[in-house]
Image (cartoon, rainbow, N blue to C red; front, side, top):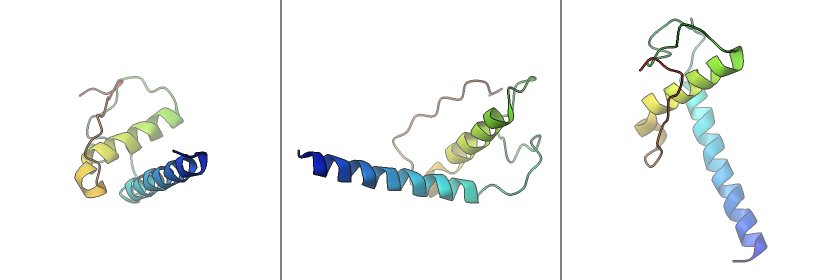
Length: 83
């Protein structure tokens, strides 16, 4: 496979990931971080940082809406959650 072909493949795959990410974010309204609809797997008693909470929200929403997002062959590891 040529370098140009590999670069095109990577760019196409990055576009797919970007579309999935944007679709996931569209599921998330303004929210209360203790709302179980936003974090269905919950949080541990301690929170690490705002960026960690945002990561949890996006990951949990992607997992919850996986079929709608077309995510089929992905394993979701949920460290740091109560579920």
